[in-house]
Length: 153
Image (cartoon, rainbow, N blue to C red; front, side, top):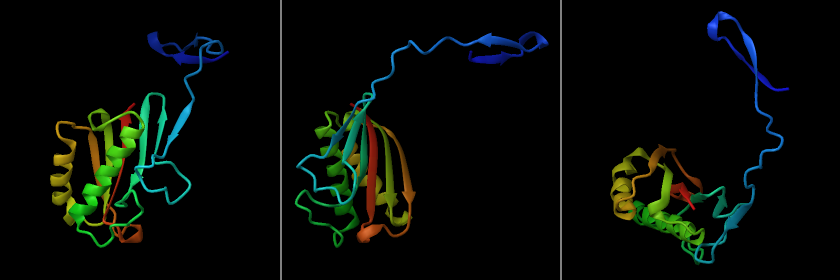
């Protein structure tokens, strides 16, 4: 029997918890999304996963759908490509920018913060998801920005 202690009234007493053995389990199906509009993932992951009504977008890098890495491009061009990749992953998962809940941004230098804000504001429009920008130092392959996101499906 599961129980919790309630100290109300000054004396501890045991309150039985409800039997959860007959409650329906939550939907545990996971849909992996790797659309042809994005480059093939470079590791053992999907561009996005849909689970329990939410879309989880893996960290997107400035790589075009044909596999060309934009390592020599300006920060702004890399940011635009990354955000286009996030939008493509969301669309393939049946979601969109307007359904974003949280965005996490990794930049190689805090100096890029204002430039990212400008590109992001144009891309996000009226959407205002929770967001964090994390200056990390050098990113792999010489990229300057990576973005992951969570949205409602």
